[in-house]
Length: 212
Image 1 (tube, rainbow, N blue to C red):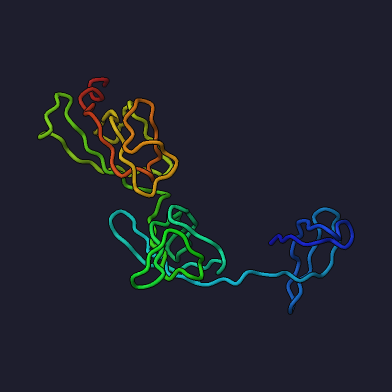
Image 2 (image 1 turned 90 degrees about the vertical axis):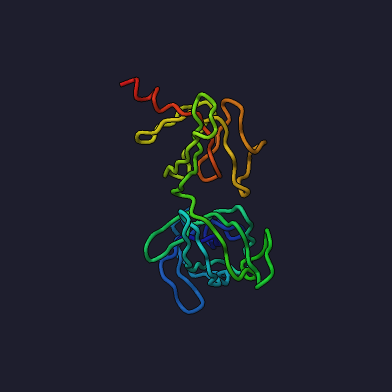
């Protein structure tokens, strides 16, 4: 563990990075990484609280718990690493529940009762594929599993198994940030999978197979 602390040897008036060697009652023994001086100091640690976290993943949900500093401010759209007995995953906050009828976009951890989140390190993206002749009644729906940071681009052809489609437009999730428009429909527009609500594409399956 590394902590900031003044060093009586080389930096008594400004904090430097220290390596914690051992912890005692009230004080810890640390070594300055600048000059290697070893001394004792007091570290003020933020109070942490445990909160419930509801995680949505692939249409299902489960509940876990997480610890965080009580005074830290959190907001809808932020992401954090959640450790559970089964896995370690990245989740994005979709809602903050402060009470039975109280929801807020931003709050301190101490105020939050339950974090509502969705897993974003690996996601399932809904796709509507339209035939190239424009017959909407022949459209079909797909679901593709990709890493959350997988990038889709309008105008590019995507291939998943026996399916291939040219991305025509990208509908974004409500919690997606950093985009100028929703949906995205200009050639070259891009979005990462964790921000995508649904892809709309033109069927390229026969074209992909003809290349073989």
